[in-house]
Image 1 (cartoon, rainbow, N blue to C red):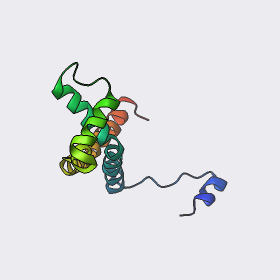
Image 2 (tube, helix red, strand yellow):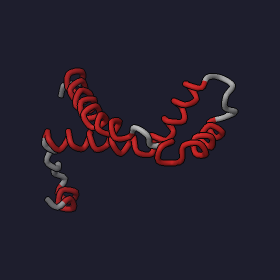
Image 3 (cartoon, helix red, strand yellow):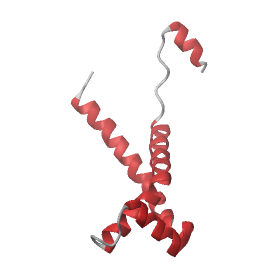
Image 4 (cartoon, helix red, strand yellow):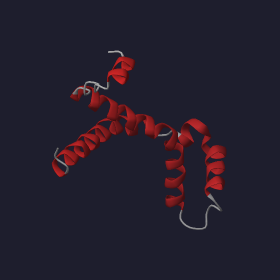
Length: 106
């Protein structure tokens, strides 16, 4: 379907299929976690170590880098997180869509 044709005629694009929406939400969840996972690792380490061990998040990140390296320090456990992210975000998005339809019927 040519999007320019729809823009010129003012007709709406066909709605994406259920499968497409589920896949898009799942992949969005995975992509969302990729850049944030190292930050989450720093947050978790600061929580586990307790107050006063690290001067700042940057200090904690440098400490992780020196002691564990990039792969083991910042990306340890990422596979289960990403596997869990796909169905979790897909379900969350579908629930959101359902609630919008229930609360705002057209």
